[in-house]
Amino acid sequence: MLRKSMIFATVFLLVFTTVLSAAGRTEPTVAPTKTIYDASDWDAVMEAAKKEGKVTVYAVTSRIQAAVQKFTEETGIQVEATRLSEVELIERVYQEGRTGVNNVDLVLIEDYPSMKELLIDTGYLVNFVPPEAIAHIPAQYHNPMVFAYVNRIIGYNTEKHPTDPFTSIWDLTLPEYKGRVMIRNLAITGEHQNAFTELIRRSDDLEAEYLRRFGKPLEKVESNAGLEFLRRLILNDIIIMTSDTRIAEAVGSRGQADPPYGFFHVYSKFRDIPRLNLALDFSKNIQPLGYYYGMYIQLAGKPRNPNAAMALANYLLTADGFTQWSNDVGIYSMSSEISHHPDDMPWQWWEERLWTYDPEFAAANRGFVLDTWLRYVQQ
Image (cartoon, rainbow, N blue to C red):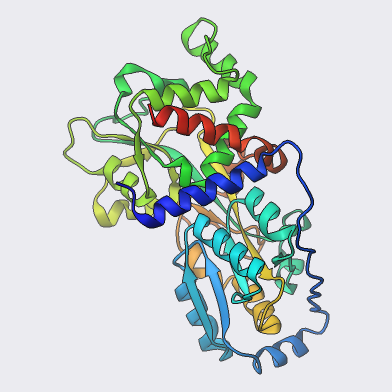
């Protein structure tokens, strides 16, 4: 049985996914807030920041706790940070903004289509480009302000498979993988919904890949090869999970005769290989290897502590502020001052091999993904 919070999150995501994919969108009923963040005199910003109250941060990553503690030690500015899932964060900021609560000052947020439609277009969040970004992050990553990119891959157990077992993404729909593929629940994972819209958008590529792999045209029940792939994946007795950590550990645990496979779990979980003695690797034969998505830093439209929020946003984009993320694989800053982890490949390597998604197309089509998911999961 789903936990109460998960049921609520599923219902909320279903509602705003329907809003995002509605054919005729209406203008938001709440006018955007005209908050101006002036960073032209940074010394004045920092001086004012130290006179304001405690900064409130919502983030999709638990690493924010250690990062803000270091910020407080260096500046004296107090911070209260709360880690939330992507659905919980969007729902909380939306509800607080709609009711005028104005609790939050800054967010680290994922799921750009939902963020834009529900939080930016309504004025609940405002983009801010700190001095650090102007100096070291290319302008193409400024709007919305990219904090980092995160990659997801398809994992397998190296005890079971000393070499990559896959030759195509369609392999995962074959009988030999029946009941062995794990995936996070799409109903509560907005970025997975966005990623599957790219499979819809590149339907011709998927059909060509099916022909290459099996030597015959794809026969579809669904109208699109991306949705057909999702249908077949689900009906192959997919294992639905709620955590990337649990997926990575289940896939990589040693001593399994028939281990599962991880579909689109975050690459950052590879940090646990030495500590947990995991037999874990990712497929390099499948095209795409996985997908990547952005984590964005945004300020509240009506912050209680605007200068302190600006100061924290700037700090998190520095090499010092990004330490909690740069000391790990699978998370990549766009700053020229911050290098990838030495055990990882550079961002350019990943960018050439992963798919991302088109935000406008995702917003218009993720409802079809969720509908397909729910129809077949419930069978």
